[in-house]
Amino acid sequence: MTAGPTFEFSAFLVELDAMSHLVQDGGFLDGPSCARLADFRERVERLMHVKTSGTTARWEISRDRPLRTRHCPGAYRPQATHGLASVVGELSVRWDVRLTGQRKKRSFAMFQVDNERGNASTRVSIKRATENGDVEEELAVWRSDIRSPGGVGCFYHTQVLGETNVTPFPDFLGVPRFPDPFVTPMAVLEFLLSELFPEAWDEHLSSSAHSTDTWRQSQKQRWMDLLDAQRQIVGHPRASPWLALRSWSPSEPRSC
Image (cartoon, rainbow, N blue to C red; front, side):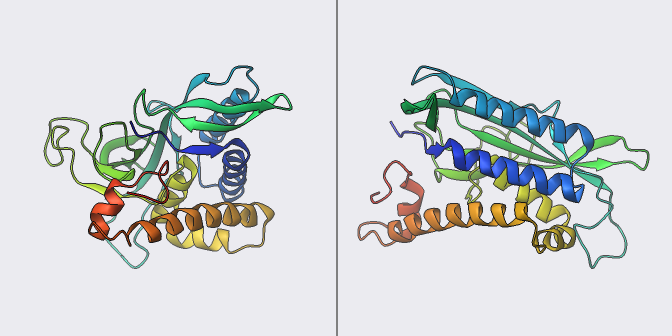
């Protein structure tokens, strides 16, 4: 059975803190969402200080109380002049995790995605928004998932729709599963913000703010670690690069 990936609490919390400052300073999320992000962070930190290794928890930002962006009247297509809808983006999270390793100095340093209980998933939804602030129909849905035991597709993959029996992309089909470099919920949130507000997000991160530098360094390390592992995997002599990558998991960083 494929083990779930392991994360350092400290690095995960650094991401949460840096992203929280970035979205608040730039006004990219609505007011309730900032409070929900702070609550999510508190639940992550709380698990560090329990006493027993192997303790499990579910970290969740629910679909009925998601992180929601400010209204976007058309910034997602900067060059377009007509035919655009005002939209908002919503992000929800469900990660089942367990403590791993030894408790030191009254806290644990590591946790592992508990994919025996189900895959870890970060869901993104784009919805049409009205002028008076109401949110209407869902225009797009995708999920950044971590493969569950016995699952197929890349270990980190994006799934489009696949939640009902309605076409296109009905749930029984389960494909396509696109390879996904956005491993953590906050990385997925950056992707969402950069898609809806490409110019504003780029300008905001071009500043020299401390939170920007912290975010940049945390993501640089994740990207370098992932790309380095994948670079070695695709050179496997007994498989095509794609099949080697599809079968790879971070619990086996140097094999297929």
